[in-house]
Structures are given as structure tokens and as C-alpha cells.
Length: 288
Image (cartoon, rainbow, N blue to C red):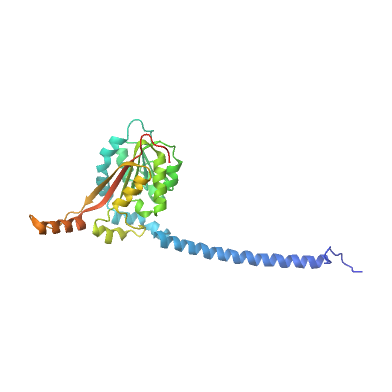
């Protein structure tokens, strides 16, 4: 007869305690191994994201300065954007909800929102860069930090007169772009307008070089492709508008074949650097 009590498996209390301690040590080792593997996977995921979209925490800290260097000054961009004010006045009317006349996604430095504010047009915006959002709010702009697609999806349906996105879609993969178009259609009232601006790859200097100044760009979007995606997403009366040509240093010949060749060279090298696509939500359409 043993001096220590045994359990149903014939183990003494001391033996059972030692077995439990062994299991605890094994579980602790497994937990430590899993934590190390999780840390490795997190690092690999971070590196993969940088490879996919070119962005990361280091570049994010430079993006405001990068924008000043490569996008142009605030005054230069504002002057270009002012060309859209006649469209806004035509589309955004008294029937639009206060504060939601124009919803701008990817607002960046907020030039468009400031321009609309100065024109007494109700407007709000969203941007994924917290530094831009903080700076915009300090200037009194109605700007929130968040994801463009989620922000539009969360808006009441049929509530916005315009949804605008300047130099945003070239940063998106096609699935995200289609999701953005669907979310914009959800937010727009019938007759409301979607306005997209993006670099123009029919300008060969843009397509071959200038587009790639921004490492967060994915690939150039030909105008015909953007027009198709907007139309296929349920927008009507789609317009493609070439914008911002460079001044050509070429002196065109008066007529004939030489004139045509020189004109082709001038158009492809110094033609519109950007283009806009405008599409309208049908007045009486079934919701998609």
C-alpha cells in the first residue's frame, strides 16, 4: 500500500503536479514560438505593403513636403481647380443638404475645400493622411481622417450634389476603384455629379516619366479606361475633359506633312498632362 494518494490513472499527487508543470512549460515555449512567428509575419506583411503601394511610415512623414515639390504650390493647384467652379455652381444647388453639397475624397492639402469655402459652397472632405487632416482642420476646413470608400458608404444615400477626387484613383487597384465608384453613386443624389481628375498617359512625358515621380502611384489610367469604368458603374452622360497642357517650344510649320508631324510631336510631348472624367447619377435609376 502506497503512502501517497493516487488518481484514477494511478499517479500520485506529486507526479500529477510534475506532469502539469511540464505541460505548462511546453505551452509557454509554444506561445513564445508563435509570438516570434507572428512578429516575423507582421514584418513581412509590412514589407509587402510597401512593395505593393510604395508607401510606408517613413514616406508618409515626407508626403506633405513631397506634395509641395512635385504637385505644385497651393496657389498653383488652386488656380487649376478654380476652373471647376462653373461646374459646381451648375450642379450644386439649394436642394443639396447643408454641409454635403460637395464631398471631396483624398483632399490632401485641402486646396479644393478652401476654394469651395471661399465660394460659399457647402463642402466636406476625407483623407487618409492624418497630417493633412490636422493641417486642414487648423485652417477651419471640414475634413475628417478616414478611408474614402468607407466614408462614402457611411453617408446617407442620395445626399451629395457632387463627389470629387483629384489625383486619387491612380493610387488605387481596380477593385478599390470600382468600390469607390459604387460608394460615390450611393452617396450622390439623382442628377449628382462624380468628378475625377488623374494624370493623362496620352502625354508621353507623363506616361514615361512624370507619373512615376510619386512612388505611391500604381499605373497610369488611359482616359478610355476611366470613362468605361465610370460608365459601367452606372453613371451617365460621361465626359472626358483634357487638362493642363504644357507650352510647346516647337514652332509648327505652316502646312503640309511637316506641319502634321510637328503637331503630333507637340501634342504627344506637350499636350494635356491631366484629364478629368465627369459622370452623372441618372435621375430615375434602380439602385445598384
